[in-house]
Image 1 (tube, rainbow, N blue to C red):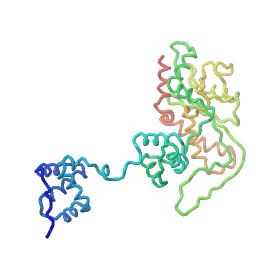
Image 2 (cartoon, rainbow, N blue to C red):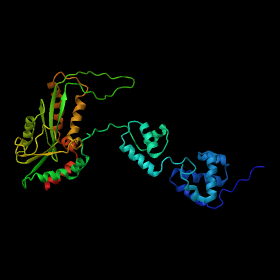
Image 3 (cartoon, rainbow, N blue to C red):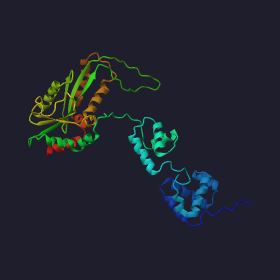
Image 4 (cartoon, rainbow, N blue to C red):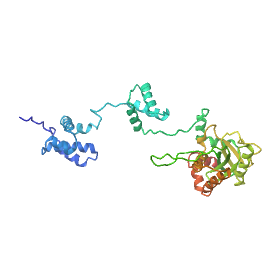
Length: 355
């Protein structure tokens, strides 16, 4: 004798189920409502209803049990995987600590993260699962920017938050005088081949020429902040005298204004007030070991994308390639402006000029 089936709709709310099923936009909720509706209508057996909805019979029985016990509210209260599934591996506090650790610990391997989870959070997690959790956080292997151990992070942050404006005030510049801001740097380029990654096809090992020749050239560069301008100098070496020539060129760009040049603290850079600095040029020095504050650093990296993986017969040949690239840079004012961008450096320069 067949077993008597329990009534599907003891609460007499099937009309509400049908109405909700027609308007519900969340897929898993609509799927449950559809299953209850079909089971209540009784045109198909439960195995057939489960097949129509696309679930197992066991899951259908569970949904019907929730509906019989607590109606529509209990049926839709059980979120997918939230009840009856695996217990959460992390508490909310542990998950947040893991997120911070991924951002700050600079792990090279997932095994290091696995060890930290065990030592600091007391969680023993398989390596495959560690990879999965790091993927959920959006973690990726990245090349880290190097930071000198002597860097003063507080000083660097303070400079970004008003340090430039304060140093301009300390220069005691004459009132009503027009100001023009520059940021400068220099880079060494040589005949010793510098290799960078290249595109190639799967299964092929790219081969590129290489030479070891220790002959160098230096490029001094300054880019305008808030105005489209750039100045570049070739020099065989770095020295105080060569830097004086470079500053003279900046001062000649517009003799009637005061040029404020932001520089790093290299030993071959003059300090403000030095008698070898042009009268219409004033100098501001960045905090030590803070190359990320200088956008001209990005310019040298762009040039090396052009000169890398190439063999040059002479420094003159290398200069011709760099010059060709720089011509496109200084002939297009938008490129000079985009290098500095519209962030903190430009904002502070504008504020200092107005004050």
